[in-house]
Amino acid sequence: MFFRENKPKEGNKVSQDRYYLLYELFQSISSTLEPKEALNLIIDAAVRITGATSGSLILVDWEKQILNIEVSRGFVKHIGDIKLRVGEGITGWVAKTGQPVLVRDVSKDPRYVQVKEDIQSELAVPLRVDGKLIGVVNVDSVKLGAFGEEDLNLLTLLSKQSAQVIRNAQLFDTVRRKVEELSVLIEVNKTIASNFNLQKILSQIVERTARLMKTKICSLMLLSEDGEELILKALMSLLCLQTVETAPLYYCNSSSVAHYSLMSKHSLLLSPERNISLSPPRRRGMG
Image 1: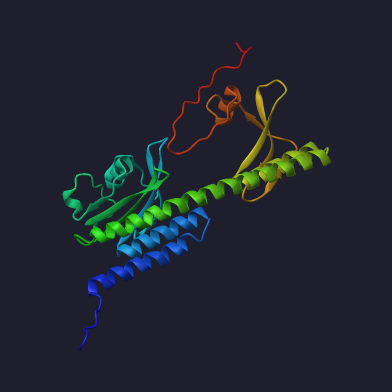
Image 2: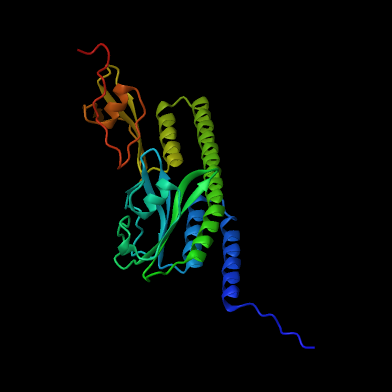
């Protein structure tokens, strides 16, 4: 009696190979706790596993209702400057509804917002952690009908596993930053306790603050005795650390950020997307 050898169908073998590739890619993704590296590994895996022409990984800023494109592939330049709102475009729709979207022909989908001229099909899936949507993984192709149900399943599996990696990396980064902040405070306290030179203390504060915040410029100003002017005492820039012995005066004009913070007695965080009116209440005792 002869038994026929059962060989796997070609289609099944291709599927098995893709799922095994997904497993290998996720092993690489889960090996890092660096947020940016994790995002890059995830989008690389998404593009590779689906055979996409381009792709992007988006994190949602729920406070501002904005989609932030953190990393992208297949574009002439990084498209991070493009800001879509939650509900806008296909990725915005996925962010709003939490549902994946497979579009075989973007020209027939009214939700589509063109970012690249030759894109013809798109696939987007949500990133969730503990039931909360934190972002969207999106891939595109210059071919019509480039993605199918298997691509949707693969990308969904990738996003489910990757979302937790992103959250873990973010938590690790937060803890690391808190440790750095505490270290800076300890260093400043040591400087104050061991040094009676005010100028040196102020310079140390500026230097360590700039290092901690990773800023290009950091300055420290003190309020004059009459309370009318801010006096620059120390300045840290990319070029040098400058201590100001004979300090120039920085006038508290009503339109300055420093004036707003001083008069309102509140910290102020500015970003390109945020517009504020720099008109704080007048100080008590002033006519």
